[in-house]
Length: 149
Image 1 (cartoon, rainbow, N blue to C red):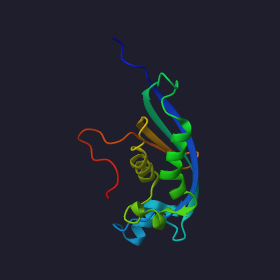
Image 2 (image 1 turned 60 degrees about the vertical axis):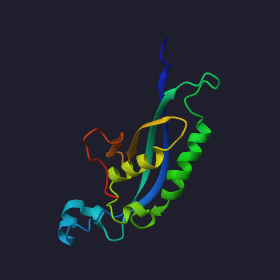
Image 3 (image 1 turned 180 degrees about the horizontal axis):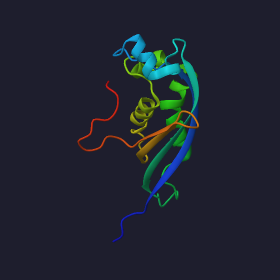
């Protein structure tokens, strides 16, 4: 008997947010050296693009991996509503003690979306600028990935 076909679905979302890259573990001078202009005390903003990939078998009745309207509603509730037009350092609890770099934003989004019930979350990609993007596919065996909670 053949195993059910597994496909990947990629979906793209957008949100705008501001942040300041500043670590409590570094002194003022070291923060300025490490983060440069991104350490501006007033913060700065980005128009983030988030791509997610989910996988699963094609449902014989619907012909889909997951219902797109349900996926969109889940992402809206878990990521877009809480993140859009916020100052991440203060308005997202996870970033009060963790520097909201694009890497850590990517990990946090993955953690929020892994509970989607209809398909398996495979990876999250966050584009911060046209030059910077980061991708996270969850923890790997023996690895310690992600920010500290």
